[in-house]
Amino acid sequence: MPNYRSGAALVILLLVSAAWAGEPAWQVRETAGSVRVQSTMDPDGNWSPVKGGDTVQALSFLKTGRRGAAILVQGDSRIRISPGTLMEFPESGRHDTRDIYQTTGRATYTLTGPDPVRIVTPWLVSTTTWGTVTVTIEDGFATVEAHQGKPIIVSRFTGRATVLDPSHMVRVDPRAETLFQAAVEQAAGRSVLD
Image (cartoon, rainbow, N blue to C red; front, side):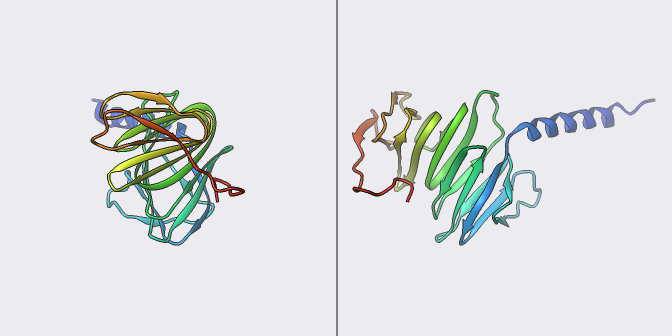
């Protein structure tokens, strides 16, 4: 009698591996200080140090310490991650969107498309195909600043949405019933990515 369970388990494992392999990995361009990664596939849940040249696969968490920072690249897209940031790179459920969950800290995303990226925070969701946005999470609120492009920002509390113009920002907290958009003050001669 054939062992159908073993065959079914092998097919499921191959399908999951193929789907996971289809998720584009982010390559670590450079790091400073403490930067660690944890794979949700690791049964022990260990955090491992990250260095330039490593990859961050789907189904992973990445965190920077108080003095840690990292730059991740994927094709022409880039994420500059500041100290004290926790991110998750889940397996995207939809093929037309890549998701990144940012729980704490600050990160600047420079995205070149063609697929949209959804940056999910506890308070808002920012969807961008092309452009540069900075997402900051601190003290019970999330802020998105648009430097280039026009991301769509949706409050996770009210469902209200706005298209964020370049050089504008939006801030959302648990008590916010609307999304407030305001111009971003830039220091003369200073790049937003410095």
